Image 1: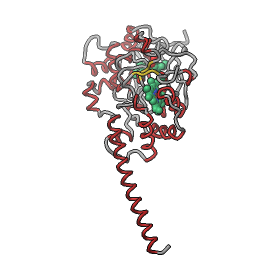
Image 2 (image 1 turned 135 degrees about the vertical axis):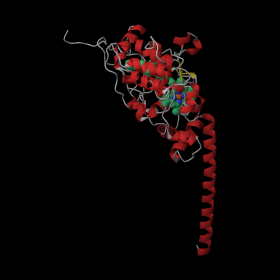
Image 3 (image 1 turned 90 degrees about the horizontal axis):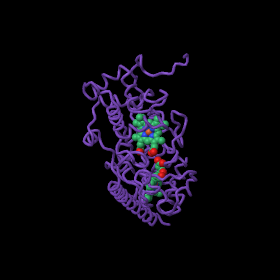
Image 4 (image 1 turned 30 degrees about the vertical axis):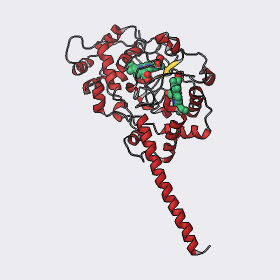
Length: 357
Ligand code: HEC
Ligand code: HEC
């Protein structure tokens, strides 16, 4: 080849490279625009305040209560026991062991970002985090307090809580009560948002995700995961049957005890095995997967989704690529939230186990 013709070939290659990188840039922009139509970045603190106004004093009290084991019958178990903020708001167990030693029949979902969902629990039986917070304290399979009055008695026995309730809810004779306690826990939970590079991406920074992650995002959209995992939580905004296209779901998960899901709440046949679609933020850290914690590998969970929800055996390449994208959804848990506060000291009437009596 002459020098001259070599030059022609070379410039042709350069030209085609330039074109393809321009084409890449266009494809990148298209993907971003598509993603922006499907997902939403996390709200700012001010946007959250518009949804529900919470004060610093309420958040501070809620954080103390979240970490306080004295709200359980054995004075050992706190919200943080099962929703450990050092491990992305979960306990990484299939089922969680309650105070009385028994296990509930469902996997503990993360408390991170959960305030953004349409409803709480796998079956959506609580309307928001405030309503939800009352459940575990009184659930015999969880913190096992006998009733609301028993919780209030404990809170009133700890002198340091009175000024915290005053600051959070205004001074009044009965402000140390169950309702205010759950409102404060809810206020704290509303701060548990975990920003990621994906949020930067959705705000328009096309390079906040790398090439492999963008390929995974594209596969996630093209394969059809976005029929259900959409919005700010990448899920959490609708109810769907597990085993929608191919089922029953336990054919794939090997679950021993089928779960009726939302049917338990509505008693409507259409809700049999229907669950609130879980959010996928931090999903790489919230194993094991599904409402019964039956699957430990994220690859396997994605494969099962392909089959049960979309009726397709996904290509190994797509599964891998989607998992790469899902890993980019692991966000930042604020140091403030995951630092256990100093709790107020017990008073003379605070329950305790005295092993000398
Ligand atoms: C013994 C373990 C355990 C303890 C203690 C516990 N939880 Fe849970 N939590 C669970 C389980 C299991 C579920 C799912 C139950 C279901 O869906 O039926 C759950 C669900 C939730 C949810 C719903 C999240 C979502 O995505 O729907 C929130 C929020 C939550 N818990 C907050 C709390 C708070 C606040 C406390 C303390 C007052 C607490 N939990 C104590 C195990 C626990
Ligand atoms: C038709 C709705 C639908 C589609 C489509 C769908 N999902 Fe899901 N997804 C769900 C529901 C419902 C659950 C909860 C199932 C359960 O545990 O009962 C779920 C659970 C998951 C979980 C487990 C999350 C956890 O915290 O346990 C992952 C991971 C997941 N989906 C990823 C995907 C991926 C990837 C795709 C595309 C291949 C996809 N999903 C498609 C509805 C859907």
